[in-house]
Image (cartoon, rainbow, N blue to C red; front, side, top):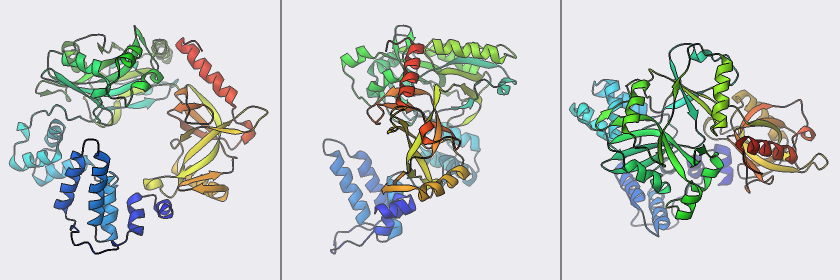
Length: 480
C-alpha cells in the first residue's frame, strides 16, 4: 500500500491498485449507486455521540464493500476525502446552471451566496425563482482575500483610486453571523468555531440588527493586541474554562459587513459598507470596530513605511490597504485589497528530508524539512520546520533529481537526504515548540531561494535562532 501511495501520490489511486474482492461471499452486499452512496454520506454526516468514530468507520466500510471494481474504490476514496481533483469548482457549476436555464450568471452567483446550497439554486433557476432566495444566516460565505505587496517598493499599485488604510491584525480571520439575538462564528476554512469563543458570541448576540460581519479574532489585554502565539491555546479548544478565558481575553474586530437584515451588501462600495458596520456593531470588551483612515493622495513610500512602523508598534502585523470603491468579492484575491507585511527575518538552513508532493506535484519532491546547526563547533543538525512554497516547478524538478540521487533512507513518502543543500527561509514569527528538535518553529515559512553558494557548515546555528527570537520579543516589549 505504501509503495502504491508513493508511486501515485493519490490515496484513491493507491487503494484502487490494492483493492481485492471480499474473501467470502457476502449475501447482503450492497450495490453502489449514486442514491445508495448519498444515503451513506448522510449517515456519515449525522454520526454523533461517544461511538461516532466506530459509526463512521462502519459507514466507510459499507461504502468500500459495495464497490465492485477498482475505479469505484478510487472515486469513493476521493469523494470521502474531499480530494476529487477534477477541476470542477463551484463557480463552474454555477456558470453551468446559468447557461442551462438561461439565467443571468451574476444573479445565479448571488443566489448561491445567499442560499449556501447549490442544489437549491439550481431548482430556483429552473423555476425562475432566483430573486425569492433569502439570505441564509448560518451558511458561511467565502472570504475576500488580499494580494501581498512588496515592502519597500514604489507601491505603484496605489496610484489609481482612493485607499483606506487599517492595521493588519495578527489573529484569526472570522465571519460572524448575527440573527435574531443569536450568533455564530466561522473560520476562513468555513468551520464553525463558535464554541471556542463564547464571550465573542455573547457580545455579537447583543447587536441590535441581523448582520454578517467580516473581521479578525485577536488576543487582547487592555489596549494592546497580543501576538498570535498568545491566541494559540484558544484554538481548537471548545468550551474554554473561565480560567483560560481570563488568562487570554479575546476580541472580534469587525472591518466589513456582507449583509444587513435581508439586504446583501456585496456590491456596495467599501466606503458605504464601512458606514453600515459602524451602525450595526454593539461595541464591548469582546467586540470592536476596526479603526481606519484614508491614505493621503500620492503617499510616498516613506510615509507608508511610517504607517507600517506605527502598526507594528501597536502589536499588529502590518497594513491593509483597500480601495474605497471596492465591492466584496468572496473567495477572490485581486487588486481591490492589498496587504503589506515584512518578514521577521530569514535563516539559512539545511534540507535533511523531502517528501513527495500532491496533485500536479505528486511526482516531485516538493516538501522540504530543514534544520539548523547546534553550534559553530558542533555541526549536529536540529530540525526547525518544513516548507513547500517559494520555488518554481522547474526548480523543484531539478532538485528532485538531486535528492533522488542523494537519498539516504525512506519511510513511506518521506526521504532522508544527504545534508548538503542550503535554502534561505523567510518567515513571519518564530516561537518555542516541542514539535522540532531545535525547540523552535517558524510561522508561515517560505523558501526564499536555494543557496547553492553555501555549504551546510555555513547554515545558521541554534544561537542565531535564539537571537532572532529574543529580538522579536524585545520589539513586542516582552520580558525574556
